[in-house]
Length: 254
Image 1 (tube, helix red, strand yellow):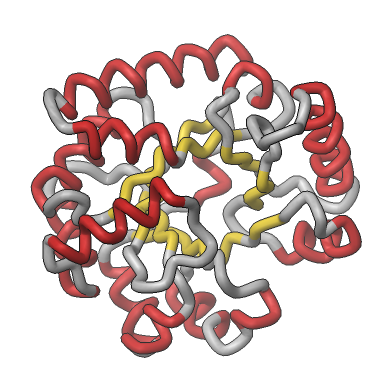
Image 2 (image 1 turned 90 degrees about the horizontal axis):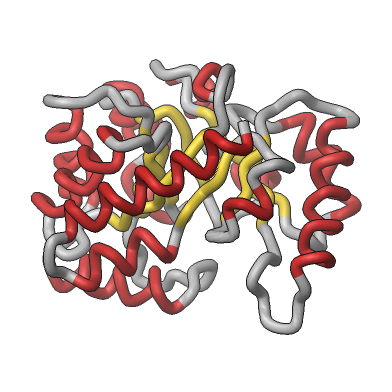
């Protein structure tokens, strides 16, 4: 099983987000391989959900395309199986809690272990609501990755102490009415709180790589990668160029 913390040992980590089966299985598999071959250190594979309340419109539309393609839990695992025939790139799932619940926590985590899916991000359930899942995640060596929002100041230290793999800090870079200065200050403050109690790697989601990379251990790119895939055309060429550019920018900040 991949040790996620070790991935962060000597570099700034690039984590692209890909929605499974958008627009089809083969495109998803090839997109993951292209990203892995061109600088992605971890792949976050989004598991489509029928009511994705924690996601923005770009990912919601990608989920709809995946459902139109016939996505289901077996398809998700099929995608990872196909990737594993070629690549051992670390993979984590971004999944709503209902999906492993319906599949069965034990069975879901066992399958993740078999496919070397190293961690789970569960956007609709705080750590406390993952209590039933955690024993099974621990049993099979799956990290549960906590999410820290800018408004969760009173919980940051608790989440940091419980974090496994890495901790995901929601960034406000690019938010309407928010200056880069304010976004930087808020991210700095959150990072300092985490660092005061834990050495867990810190990741933030933003396309403002040059502004955020110096503050954290890794960058998660969500919408930009999904948009490249949705645009069609020479998707793999465009993903390669994008990944190389991001990785080069991160190398400068390392």
